[in-house]
Length: 81
Image (cartoon, rainbow, N blue to C red; front, side):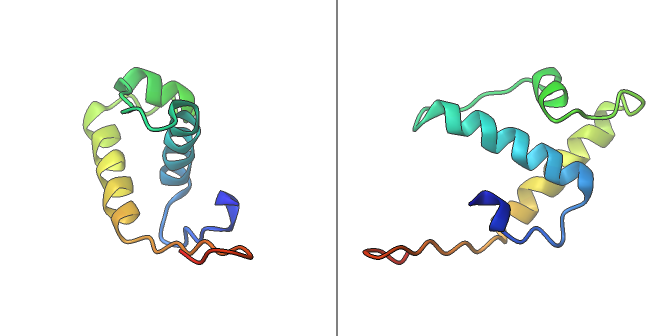
């Protein structure tokens, strides 16, 4: 169902980072998730040509800001959230 969330303002790189984090969160249940930059780069297939840590940090910051603006509605037969 996450594929139905409109990520119109996300770049392709930001979408990869977003879904890499979502997939890891899914495994964590309610536990706090901690990822190193290297692990997140690997999980998101971050471009090996782009090894600049400042650019990576900027991409993560952009994902964070855009995530804060997401509005998601969940609906089934019993609940609307």
